Length: 426
Image (cartoon, rainbow, N blue to C red; front, side, top):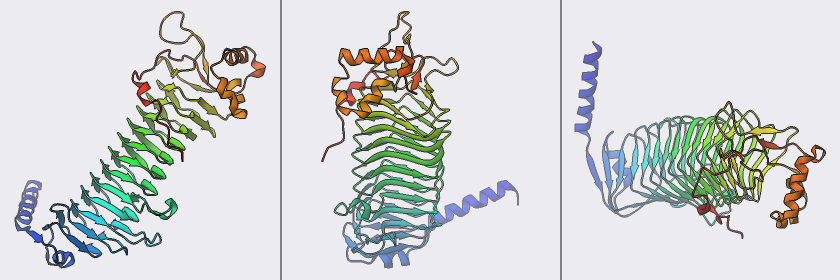
């Protein structure tokens, strides 16, 4: 059979299957399990507004579409909804009240291995241990959902909002996730897109482990312990996100290679960036503002490009632990380095680039680590004079992040809008 004829036969079969698909109405008081059993692959179950109790298993390609937001409740045991077939769509349902066994990984919706191309749209998942558990299922799409965990449980006893394990091609889009352990937990999952999510009031907004070739874009992470944690990963793009008011770090990069982190706003966290064992990464165009520590840099994090970022009004711009200077800023004639709001140099030729190098880890910074009370005097003439003296006498100097050509002006003209967004104290 020729290739053209094969395509024609395939198209006719698809049209035939679509024509055979039926739409069924499920009314309050009727059994969802019976409706699933009676339906054929490709059918649509329209579920009317009502309260349906049970632990539903969908074992064939179906669409479950809620009409006026019906509720499927799991009775506080097991998984409320388990998907075992490919090509299942769940849309417009309230899915709640799973069990609470961490050992059994009870979830509002459990997408089990092989259930590829599952779609969960505009659902409300509440009071489940895990909102969605997705394991060895590829090309899933989770979009426009509100996910809230068992908020009366201690953080360590909760599950995650969305858990991805050993998946490829996931699309996690425009979800609002809160009061879970980690809003997004991503392990051994590759070629995924995380875009437009709001992640808050959890341990981590996102926790990546051992995952490659993922895009993290236009997300908000706030009021967590950590906004975004990338650990043991490579080939990531982290772009145009906002991570603010987290009690520990905004963005953690730990054992990361060959990745780009650009255009993010990191504001009001205890540590803006925590960078540990990072190589061959590019950090550019980020706004790091009003954090207690702008960047905590340690453990051989080197051979990175850090350029075009704004470091503004951080109580301590960089906390650096290392045996030698770490160069940031201009590479290969690409222009100036980063903007530092506490830079004390000048620009005599008016080219927008400071005439003196910026050193982020000088004697005054070291003294302030040991004696926190010194921070009250940071703007005083005496302390500024001490900083200048330390730079003139190398015997007083310690290894530092050095920006050879600091920019005099920030890239972000609206940086002041991010002042005062610190995490709430207990």
